[in-house]
Amino acid sequence: MKPDGMGTIPLKYVVRTVRYLRNYRGLATASVVITVLSSLSALLAPWPLKIVVDHVLEKHPLPAGIARVFGIFGTDPGTLLAMAIVAATGVALLVNGLHVLSNYANTKLEQFITLDFRSELFLHAQRLSLAFHDRRRSGMLIYMINAQGDAPAGLIMTIPLLGEALLTLVGMIWISLHIDTGLALASLAVVPFLYYSVGYYATRIQTRLQHVRSLESESLSVIHESLSMMRVIVAFGREEHEYRRFRAQTSLAVSERVKITVRQTLFSLVVNMTTALGSAAVLGLGARHVLQGKLTVGQMLVVIAYIAAIYKPLETISYTIGSLQDRFVNLRATFDLLDVRPDIEDAPGARCSLRARGHVSYENVQFSYAGRTDTLCDISFEARPGQVVGIVGQTGAGKSTLVSLLPRFYDAQGGRILLDGVDIRELTLASLRAQVSVVLQEPLLFSGTIAENIRYGRLHATREEVVAAAKSANAHDFIMALPEQYEAMLGERGAAISGGERQRISVARAFLKDAPILILDEPTSSVDSKTEAVILDALDRLMVGRTTFMIAHRLSTLHQADKILVMDHGRLVEQGSPAELLERHGVYRQLHDAQMARARRRSVAKSSVDPDAQVAVPA
Image (tube, rainbow, N blue to C red; front, side, top):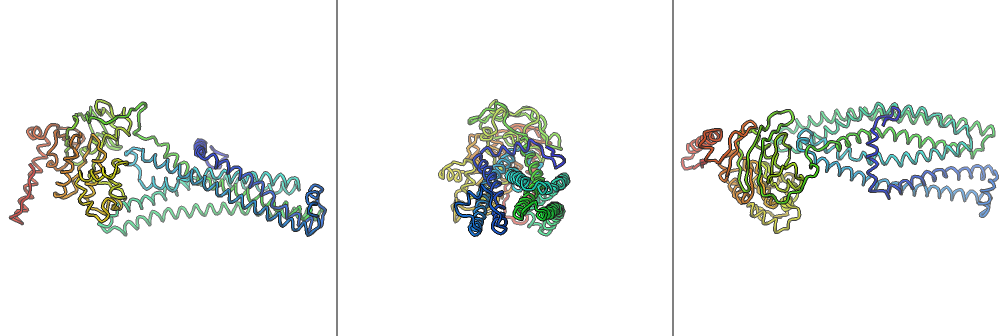
């Protein structure tokens, strides 16, 4: 919507925001009731003062209706003064009591709506494809979820503020008009100036706020990236460089934030000065009416109090509308994220797959990343249940991309992939991914305990099942040697244990998931030969009875492969058993001979240093 140039926010966003109230109708109703009562109670505040001035000090007679009520207690000045004091105290207690209730209801409502919205953002961000996350920096998403996730709640909570201000404004103007029409109308002379100020401010602030938010999110991205790359930073001694990078980015954000704050302060100055001039004019006109006998002093005080109170809701409305621009910027950014449709989602009528047999077929599969072409070109092959399929090729040949299409981390852009004769796009994502276990080159662990990380393969696994999985992965012995054993905390990304130990926990996690299809993406490439032997021994057990895809640079790790796929620049150039490929004298034979030659050179070099040393040469 576009309210007369006062900033822009699509009406659909407002409608979507109000929907978050559906789970908290009781709290929302309580907030509305308290708002109405607060507005009504605010109208009572000036009247005890009028009684003191007009009927105690000036000794004017009470109006007939009020005299009948007060006559029960007496109408002498002392009694009236005491009753006015009691009434003033009661009104103050009522106003402040309602304020406490309002804060409780509104704070609870705001926090729960913020929790719901942040949770929705977090879940939605996880459902977006890896291709989306490849394009977006994690720090910006963190900033959006954490710093901008309160936007809907903030917008909703302006409703009680504006509602109370409007109700109070209407009530006070109505009473003021009955007491002195001229003063009431004079007090409203500032409204056009306030309206123009708000409109001028709102139309010029949104673009600047969006720029500042972008700079602040970039600062958070720098922090996130630096902390996640801490080992590299320390290894290269680049702490000062990262500090300067953070300082430069944050200084720019601070500079722009200061400029925004100055504009917001100037806006507040304009609003305050406008209402101050209005108050001075009303005071002068009111004093003149008292001198002319049109008003009593008590009536003038009531009117002045009301008009001063009128300016307070006017200021509240002005400030709230001004601050809404910040909310609108956040709201637009967060809803735009929610409007990003996942690249990969369940097809209409997708069906669940129970435990698959593991028969996988690629038929003329094509895929390209954004900005790149022909990452995979016309790939066709078949893996029968229980087969071990090795995938080899130079770096960048498309090996990891090939296996990433099977659990639909990315979707093939041409051709199709079949699981047990069914196109994987006809299966629900949850049931498809339940059929696949993945052991990556870099073992990714969470900062919890060892048991929690193994149990990530099956969240409701028993302790006995966790231990059994660890034993199968050759991890149990080193875990039991730790002081806290399975309850040992791993630290961020598993930093408390070695790389080989982290990988064995990853293998245990795959054992526990017990999926019929296994993807091994160079699981031993970053460990020493002794640790590699331990991991390969565990993987040999893990591959039994499972359709396995194993990416490897070292051909010696593919000793169990039934079939080898040879990738070259996104194309499947050879496939067959290791013996068949060696006989063809193609790319696989070239890779095999090159690795044999390197192994012999290492053997010769080692022997020249230590004549008794022996170096294994791959078969």
